[in-house]
Length: 306
Image (cartoon, rainbow, N blue to C red; front, side):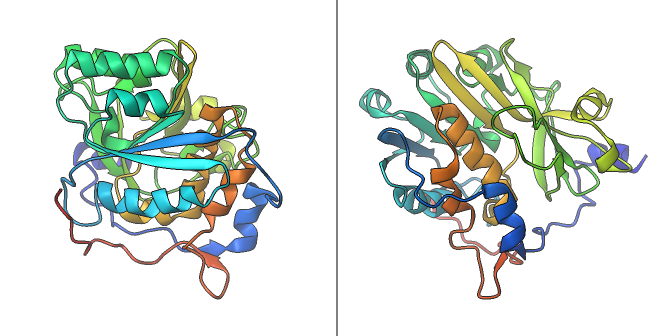
């Protein structure tokens, strides 16, 4: 009954807070040893951001871009370009991977066709949180063709905050999540009941559980209360997409386990070993005591309009 109430009131009763930092040794159980790890080729990443559209600490698109772009540039053989609101054709032509974290503008059919062509020719995409929202439905269908899932409409698709009462169950048989815990927990926000293409594979679902350790991914995904679009993969043409509807709060991007999921997804889309990306799981969020994460809710961030 509690979880039904939470879904009904958009999670208003949920306390906004990051997970407690965890010991570095616990994190490195899942990152593995990355010493000497190298990418197999040069990778050109394009980070797409947009105007911040929420209170500070939520939908901090520019803040997260400024957090991740410098970190990604520390990886050997990676170069990073930036786009605001939507890439140019030349930027699409140069990129191997598009990472998008923004509320997309009202894309034209020509822009959506450019996006689709990028994916179909073999471009990789990582889509985070509100990047899957596009209206009206006819353009939402076009966006779903590019990334696999999109907002179906306000009467169909749902959103809500969630906390540890809704663990995130992972499909650890999928290459992106192999070797990770069967479930993890965050305090964030997600969407579900999205418009979904046939080639989408859901690999992360939020679902209530009395004991997450005794709940399989398949059972969690089949739960009547499951929010099944939390993480997904998708292929179109030669391209691969890793998407998530989570990532509402800025503090979530400082969580080592959340970073681990995103970086695993990045590596999967590129057909690369994740090891070269693993140093970023601990970069800038590890204190002198070896604890990784943050206790800062970060809700006092001041958005910067651009």
